[in-house]
Length: 613
Image (cartoon, rainbow, N blue to C red; front, top):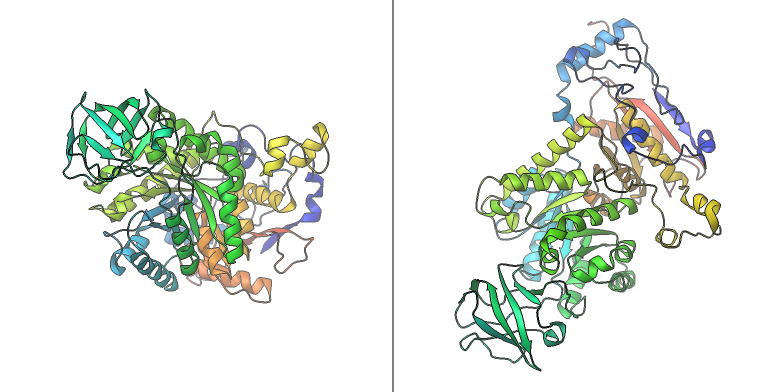
């Protein structure tokens, strides 16, 4: 059975004050606690719905959905069907937590610990959603082997893993040393742009000619993100005189940062351009562009991709002092972002990193773009089989802030326990998501202090408050009214949250699943597409499980085929209901002016019939 809402029935919502989500979103998207039609009691009560006023169980029957009043009505049906449904659910239904899929995605850096076939496949089976190719290490030959293995894994149908190429970017590094140096606080050293300084006479070379111009007396230089620090005492045309503040061991080719400053290097180096071309040739899904300082480099890269005819998502790594100064313009330009906390914590005061993490996550959330929180999330698990309690809390905080994905670096690239690290990250993320639902529903806030996540608005409107419709309060309000697709994504989320059901969407470009992900429904989003590249791109988005399916000419036949595939994968089961969204920029089985939300019951498996009961 199916109940549909057409766009013509929702026209009164356009421009209405009730259309725009205001205040706490759990009140806008989810019904109140009193009105929430959910029970998590014993298996014998599964399938019963409770209204907000009457706490007695009501038989579950047909669904009448109404977008204006929040899609809530009590259910009524004969007792025999209720007993049948409860009997089936007693046999088949798992605990809600077990049935709930993890929504936050996991990005794994591939390296020597995981780059052979057996290990990479196991990593994907354990929960990896995106494989990261770190171009700071390895060569094109080794990365090509990883690409081929990921494609082979995807062909098996066991899962869908996207490929992300992370550029090395411009880096300031020290030169080669004859022997490692033990740094003692108070000792003096000279860092020079002259070649050949190998540390034997207290002089250490730097690979960046502009180093002299970028530093000033009194600046603090960090080695490898702060493992050792120096204070700048003086400088001349070729040399910078420094004093050790925090000691340690100095080895060759260490990464150097000046706190609060970004090096004036080209954002995309010659090596980066070669790596980007490699990514086009092998067909990666995302670029993570290092040390982005302004939006200009994003537009330059996108122009390059347009000329190459490549459809690759561009993520900006926010990891420099300049990038946070230009954060809004950068986020407007990119397809998503990564909170690269390692270098960010080196160029900024470390206590500022949590603030900027929240700003970056919320900035992407408001724009409907994916965001990854990365660096040091399970650093201790490079050597230890269990995480620290602080690391567990770090993952949970990122999930509660609303990140689309969390990332493993050395933990999965060269660590001793890559699979345990994935398992810990996956388990903590899932448990945090479940606890958020238990307490107050998934929030479109990252925190109580964050601004509300509202409709997705074009960057020009956000910057000027104006649109092509004119200026002034009325025009600005009109500019905020969403398109029909976004409105349907919002109300489909409202419906799915109210009746506690998964969302099923068919897409060719991936636009509607992205919109649904933006509104963070409580239940999973199952996105079926004919385009395997779209399937992989969706692997990064929060709550979206993308599946490949060849569409049939008939809508109902395709929907039934998709439902059977979900049942085969044990993602849904007979007796459940699913909310089906037919909307988006490119019509499928509908006219361009018709948009449909429908609720359909999944057919019972022939394990138990009415006669048997």
